[in-house]
Image (cartoon, rainbow, N blue to C red; front, side, top):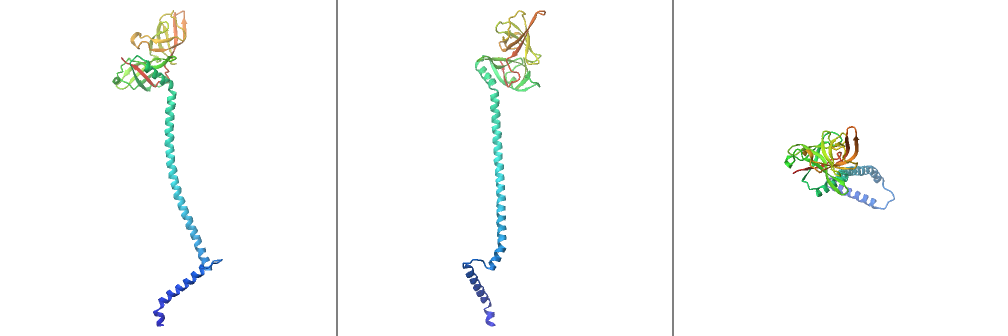
Length: 278
């Protein structure tokens, strides 16, 4: 008994070692089937292992999907910015295409004119379809004075570009000026027929056309005649192209000859204009 108490712990360690060696020997042999203990242990651990693997795959998939979402959102924002940029460029191109004739006339006038012109931008207009009264971004600081003639580049004939009469400055600020055009009902301009030098006076109308009369009832005028400002009265500069005669009306009783004129300037589309300065 004294021997067992003295070597009890050593005997327990030796016994456990012998048991482990036996187990290792048994499990290392080629076997067709598992032992009962191994089968029981496998049945217990297999669901746990499967659950852990599933949870691990689920967590990995969750964080992967979050990363994909952020990446897709970033790519989406980049695509939106690119679309906005392309849309802006497309609008600019369409704007240029829509103004092709207008810009060409403007350029050709700048190359051919002998007048001293200052270019201004239309920045505002009164309500309505027509530009009968509008504001430009030039003023007294730019040398603009009240009464100055306002023109635009127009093609009078093929490859012939001249100043087309727009109107005149009626009010001036430091950096702005108001313009009343020739189609305004309260406006009037004296003219001459370039072919015969017969003259008369034109006034604006509600339909953006010009109507007027000739001083001489016997004056020679035909449809298609081109009219220029005469400079009478000093309201407008002389020899500025006004437009073309489209209709002639004669009254024998009243001994009057009236005409309808299509302005050279398109008063539905005014972007830039030129002010004649001395």
